[in-house]
Length: 80
Image (cartoon, rainbow, N blue to C red; front, side, top):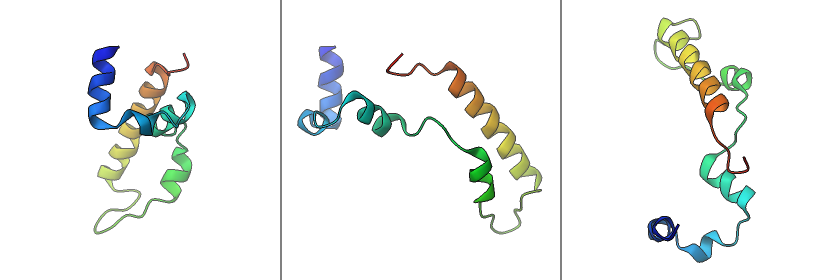
């Protein structure tokens, strides 16, 4: 634990971290755990030759959904 704290404090001064509780720190470090893919897709702006039916865009959404599924089902949360 000492080695972790030494390394972590080299990136972020510990007095700045101590103002957060474990839930706030998890949110800062890991981000929001639930991603609304439907909302994300509906609010995506495509540029150039890309559009929602472009094969590259379709692949992106498939990989993103798969990656999100794998991440949310294998990720160990700080709270257990």
